[in-house]
Image 1 (cartoon, rainbow, N blue to C red):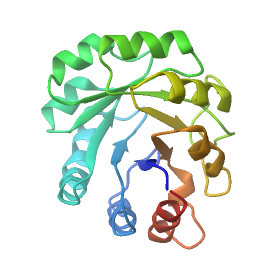
Image 2: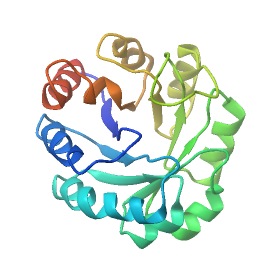
Image 3: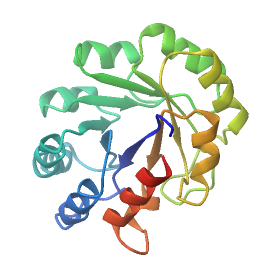
Length: 203
C-alpha cells in the first residue's frame, strides 16, 4: 500500500450544481485536499464559490486550498493557498497564511522545487505529466523527476496534469505523495464518487 493520497482540483468554472458533484466525490473515500481553481473570474465569484464549497469540504475533514490568491485565501478562511510561478511569491503567500498550507507549482524544474522547499513550502507540485484539457500546461514533467524528488527530498510532492485511473499507477510507484486530479474525477464515466473510491483502491 502506498502513502499516496488524492488532491482534488475543481473544474475551471463554478456552477452551484457543482456542489452536488463535490459532495459525491467527498463521500467516495479518503481525499486529502480540494483546490478551488477558477481562472479569469471576479473576486466576488471566488467568494461565492468559497462560501458554498468550503464548509462542505472542511466538514469532511479535507483541506480547502485556494489557487493563486493568498489574500482571498486568508479572507475566506481557507486552509491554504497554491501559488504558481507567475502568481504571488511564496513569501507573500506565507505572510498571508502564516499557519496555512502553502504549495508551489514548480513545473519540471528541480531548481524551482529546491528553492520552494528551502523557503518552507508545505509541498511542491510537478507537471504536467500527461496531456490535459483543463489548462494549457507550461511544461511537461518526466516521471524520473518525481522519482528523484521522492528519493532525495522530504518535502511532499504533488503530481499534476492529465492524471486518470489508467495512467496514475506509474506516478504512485514513482513516489508521488499526492495525485492532483480534476477531469479524471469529474468526468469519470461512473461519477465522482466511483472515481474517488477507485483512486483509493489504487493507493
